[in-house]
Image 1 (cartoon, rainbow, N blue to C red):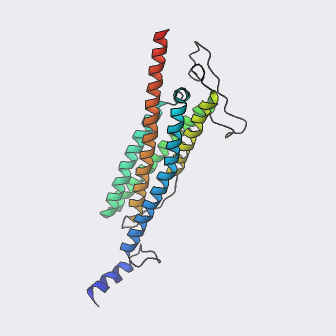
Image 2 (cartoon, rainbow, N blue to C red; image 1 turned 90 degrees about the vertical axis):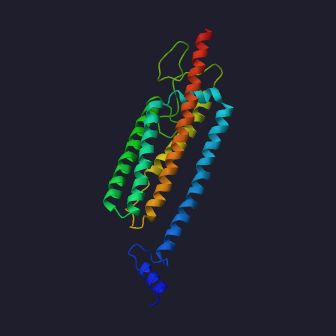
Image 3 (cartoon, helix red, strand yellow; image 1 turned 180 degrees about the horizontal axis):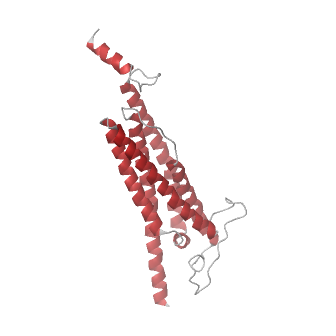
Length: 243
């Protein structure tokens, strides 16, 4: 049997080869192309959300600044660090799978799952705080509409909404519509199911692309909220000094 034909036949009998592919190389190329196409559609999907946030933030800067004061910067920062480490463990899982160290790849996978669960737990705490302060927009929670208590001048209660003069509560609600849409969709992506990879690492590499994309979006969201919160606090300090 010719050498080239023998090699192709050997590859074609690989236990991880799916029936609709001729060989493992074709399967890897198809998986890689499919993941990149998927990432492009995700960029378009989340890019629309980022565009909406940017436009409305420019249109209602004071309302978005006041709304961002109810976000916990420390929890958001910890979640970003968690996602950084989960991206690292995911990358190491890809590496160990490619070099054939399945045990190490499984350990990294389990660490990634633990970090993902940590992310969801912290996000649940943040959502609970929004529920307590009636900051969940619209009627997403039956019987618990968006109805935050607006603080009066001199009131320092952090659970109340502190609005600058002339700022509408409806514009603050718009911020939370975008906030829950972006963070909620991100959380759903974190909870996507997967399976253990084949020995070629095709699934791992695709999953690695996906996890890195999730981290990138989360870091972008958190950084923008951080900048907005600092800007709002500086504005508050200037307002107090003027008094």
